[in-house]
Length: 356
Image (cartoon, rainbow, N blue to C red; front, side, top):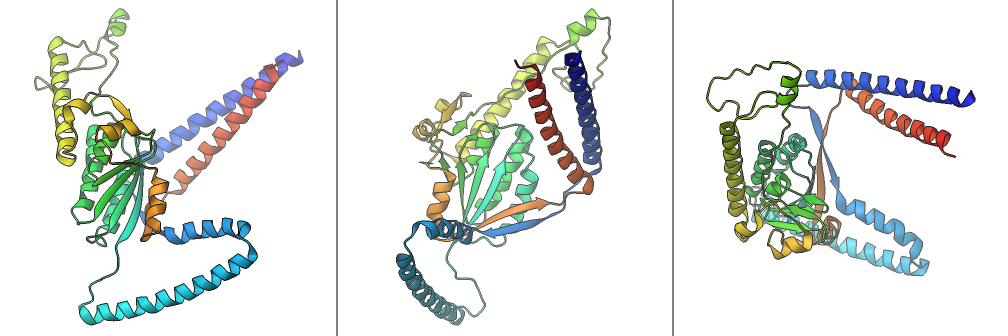
């Protein structure tokens, strides 16, 4: 009897959890419908040199001998003082040589991040970040984009790639770093770069186009359900989920896929002429080392290793667009996190009850 009571309690908790999930999903859907148009937010900039130096100092404070630290700190203060004096002198000379005030500082590195989904949702943030830095970019500067994407919609990733071309048009160089995956639309973005670096086992490619959809026509027909699809124009709708698909419609759909595929290949050739497009545009994927052999990437390295090397050479700034969120969105995100924790707790409790 006690066992059945525990089952009843567990089922009641599960019902409450499912109800809460449905309520939150409805709230999120309502909020998303209200938030149309461009999101408002702000640009956040972090100087990465100071951040990584602080990390290094934190570790070194425990590993370095006190006497060695004293000598090092004294030498660093002396060097910093000399560099400050030299910088002031250089600034004075630059102002004398260039009275209109043009900037003559060394090149800089700007770091952006893009985590893609099927709709390339972060394109909105990317365009804001690029709009913020392009007026500052000059010849000799570099933009490092840390890119992760499994690919997705052609038009969405096409727009994201076009945003990256804005960087190239300023005269600054663009480097794309792939640690895990840049597939399909992700590689469409990556190939715009002057240089692509990849982790040895990152997934690169494929260069191909995919479309799939289920068809319920026979199920509807079996249950005597009619589905009417009215169009004006021979190819307004080629394939449909509920109507009866025709051979002519399938042929036109494949023709459209092939055209998109040709455009994708042309785009890669235009941006990376070193690639033998006939050998790589097969829909296959390559891990980093194999991608290097195919000229799909230029160097094997993680983004962390590349960034740390550049930090020793230049000033680096991470730029991020932070969208403002309404209280409804914040509530929805908090509720979602709470539901995840509750679901995990209930699952653990349920598993513990039924395990021997």
